[in-house]
Image (cartoon, rainbow, N blue to C red):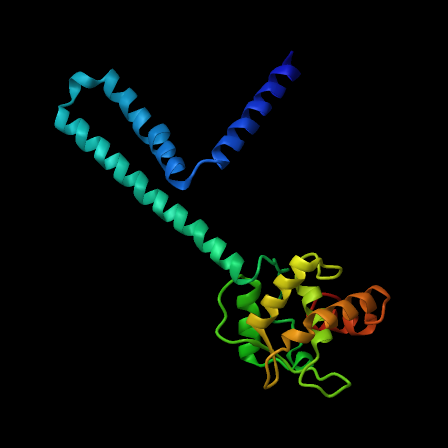
Length: 221
């Protein structure tokens, strides 16, 4: 009997949650004000109506509504800001880094790069792009596969084996937050470079580089 009652309550909560998710922001705000502001206040005045004048009752309602609206504005603003921050990094999450342990000489990072890396991992707008100065064997402007290995370490869950949608998000993140020394990252070669890097990484082709990157990030002893 207890199990059936708990099951019923869980089902009701799921239906309620589904209903709340379908409410618009204005409907949800009105519901919060009514349930947690006006309803308790109305109950109180019904019990103690003889002790208050109508002007006091109306003033109380106006004050409660105003306070709830102000609180809702702050809460909505907070969550909208979180959405904007999430969009700024294309929905990716980052591991927690100890920036004092990062080997700046290995990556060629200056103080600006470290600062912008910290802003990136904390989902904050950056002042400048992080410069990747690692030069590939073909002597092109920058090493995109080195950048992939770097991102694979700092992004939660890594970036290997991504589908088309996630890969496009990664491409936008790279374009917004990274650059090669003196040049923009070539978007046209991004997809092919990623596919080759992902396959070669799977086969263990970049193991030595990956171990060195992990050590330079302070992620291994």
